[in-house]
Amino acid sequence: MDLLKSEMEEQPRLLARVPDLNAETLENIVRTMKLRGIDSVCFVGRGSSRSACVYGEYLFNICAKLPASCFSMSPVSIYESEVVFPPRTMVIGISQSGKAEDVVQVLDCALRHGAMAVAVTNTPNSPITRVLTDLQEREAERGPSEKPARRDFFVLDCGVGEENGLAATKTLTAAMLLLAALCAKVSSGGELLAQIDRLPEKIEDILDDVPEALEEIAPRWRFLRRVLVLGRGMNYAAALDGAHKLRVNCGLHADGCAISDFSHGAIAELSPDMLAIVLASSGPILRDAEWVLKPLTEAGVETLVLTDSEDMEEEDIRKEEGCRLPAHTVRIPDCGGDLLSPILFEVALQCVMLEMAKIRGIDPDSSAKIKKVTVTK
Image (cartoon, rainbow, N blue to C red; front, side, top):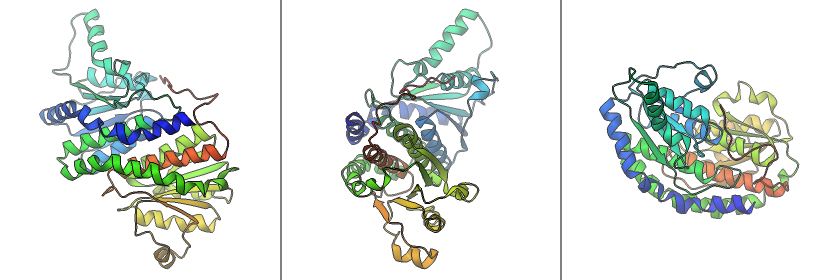
């Protein structure tokens, strides 16, 4: 548990240097995107990296106004399909260990067909960083063959040092930060870059304040078995990863759900023996977060609201939604907009995971079934 806590506490200091560490590479990526006329972005990753991919999808759709999506890797890695990635597509593969074989295979496929490729990793000189070199060596061995007119491959370095805890904490937030920095430069978003500069201070505030707020609440969670983490829009990614961490590190049956999908299935599973965590970020999805409190309350579900909004007041919810404010509300800093809030909500959910593990007497740094590095083919 001490290992997890120490790596969480490293985040403000380490994330502060990530943009500068990658400044030249970020500029080269943006320059190459413009030169190639990149008009779509594709993300690939597993586990926590998949959550970063979902975050990137929303970022590039909203901020860069580019069609972006998460790509299913099995068609390439299992079915051996030669998916033809167009030359004006940029494929971004995320693997904190750099050893995710299916991510490597998709990047290799993209480069073979002439698409632009970017690797995001915390591990220099790992398989994901050698995709282009390995491809060129294989082609040299086979002899002359037709190749794309150009191949562009870049590596973004999370640069946060070795992560030994079972949970992806500093590596995940660093990957998310890199995606935000890239998107800000693609869209010439000066305000977003300024918000990125202020982000480490906000993370430090969360690590100082949220654990204390949770200490009074956590004893109620000792015998929990089920957790539902609800978010929407930008914070759907945080909801997915929060549930992932509660499963892996706390042994809970936990699901991450988009509030927009709540009425399509999750509402049928509500029961008084579960905890719902609602990510109520300020901005366009706040009203949805407020709306979902009513069915949760009616079903007798204990609810923890994590919010960066000062507008989420008990009186307003009672008046407009006809329900009481849940018993537990924890506020986190407002980062000045919705685009970076998933990183702050991710850190807040790390704190929830740590408190949950403590009260349940679980060591979140060890598991008989889960390995730190999972190689998926």
